[in-house]
Image (cartoon, rainbow, N blue to C red):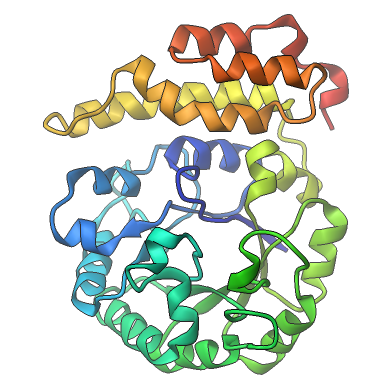
Length: 330
């Protein structure tokens, strides 16, 4: 079974993706790239499309509701080359038709497309016409329980020439919680000719087995990986020198600093925050997840809330209580 990192806005940037590749992820996805922002020349949007040396296969996820903007973004993403310049940067282009975030839905993208298969068809058709890369659709089962629009969405994807589906087996109304509807996912797998990647609620090996039993071709993991990137290695039964959450945080921080230096060099005109600002913004929410469930969590959360600089992040990561122990390894 293939295990992939789900696209997560504000989390799955290049440093975290590289961390997950080192932890055993077979494929990762970028944060959502706004087709409108790229079309109208918003420089920092291109930062979301950067990759780092050492990353495994990366898919570029885009969102939007305008066919011209979507087509432009697909073409731009397809032109990009990997850091070593010998192959395309991305292994696929993925259209998001499932994100329930209000700011995404308000612009007619994301989960608002769950109820509009024809628009999904037109958007996918525009992507297919502007790339030679495989094109996939990420969506949900439908807007709410009992309204399973995913079958019509799968049909639209097939007609548009898409190569696969990524399906969060929840409804838009559920956001990111509640039961995962594996029975509907299994029905979809049996009804579509496209390979399906299953997403939603995978926290352990039993969850992964249950999802795999639906017949999906890959299992996608999101929020669990934020706390513990080694979920991928454990599910695959491999030893990548697994570390504790804090040790993954140290690795992540090293990648983050390398990535910032790369951005400063590559985009000298764009504003890239100083090291303190960049680390403070990018690592803050990650740290809460890496340290989840550790002894003294309340005091640790208070300490994390006060972190603003690189030195403070290093100080927390150097705390003796956070040193890796043999029990952290598999």
